[in-house]
Image (cartoon, rainbow, N blue to C red; front, side, top):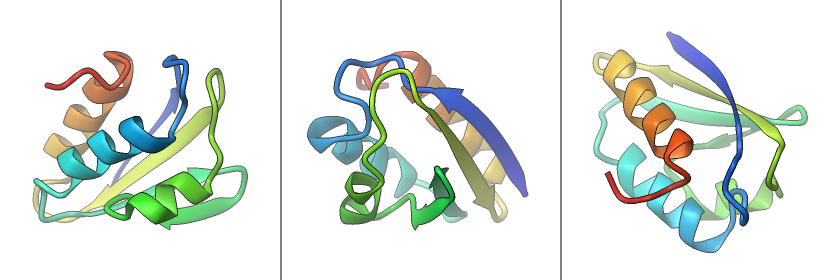
Length: 88
C-alpha cells in the first residue's frame, strides 16, 4: 500500500474538470485508489465520489493506492495535483 497527503493548490479544488482529470488518470492503473478527506473515503476512480468530498483550494487530501502498480499510481497522481491538474 502506498499513501500520500497533498494540499490542493488549484483554484477549483476537486470539482468538475479537476475531478474528471483525476479519474481519467486513476483509471489508467490496475491498483485500487481511494481519496480521503475529512474522514470520508471515496473511490478515486469515481467522479461522483470525488466531487462528493467537497475538497477545495488549500485543503489536504490523502490518496491511497493498493495493487501491483501502486507506486506508479501514487507518483502520477501526486504529479497531477502538484501541476494543478494540467494534463500530464
